[in-house]
Image (cartoon, rainbow, N blue to C red; front, side):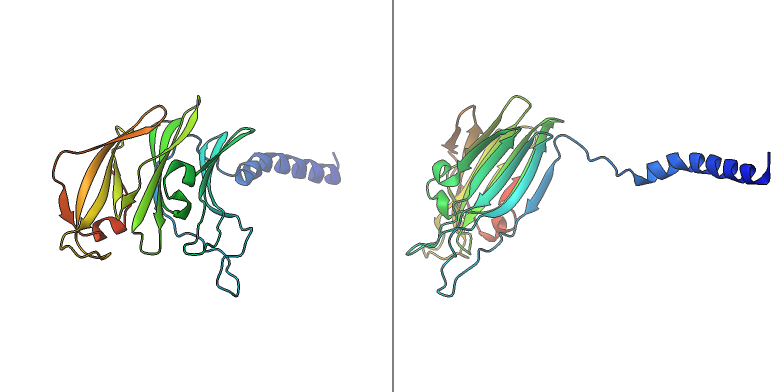
Length: 239
């Protein structure tokens, strides 16, 4: 075998040996599939405003997109509009599963829901392919009113439901029993003077996320006097 053939053979063998290594280096790590627990605060994107101070018409703002499983996503989308007294954001939960899409406008789920904006998201898992996502929404810059929605998903179905409106409150979720939720809400200032920062009387409703609706019952206990600051950093408490 002449020198030229030997050189070509060695180069070919070397390239063949390197190919698996190069292939391994080029592959990106696979993303985990299935339910993933998370908890995050969302700073809502602001709509574009016109020179007159009104929201420019026709905007569609995606505030969050969540991958529930390999075939299902949830998006929280705003369709902001300026009003005579109050601006409405028309937040809508959009579920996309395969080719099927369903929309759940908050104004249909919660009284006064058109004013609410997404501020927090928490996900808990029942199994690798079954989970519950809690969404917290606020109205106004001071967050004086909150609305909460829940998205439950499994390989068989996805459903979206909502809790009653709360005032400067939160929901408390237990991972082991995510269908049983405490809803905390202020019912007036402790000193008799209404102000955002004042301590307030808080009552608790025990809510059950059922098959078709959320049922809430007032807890018989008298409640507590608390500062709203206790809830400002966490509209959703997960334990």
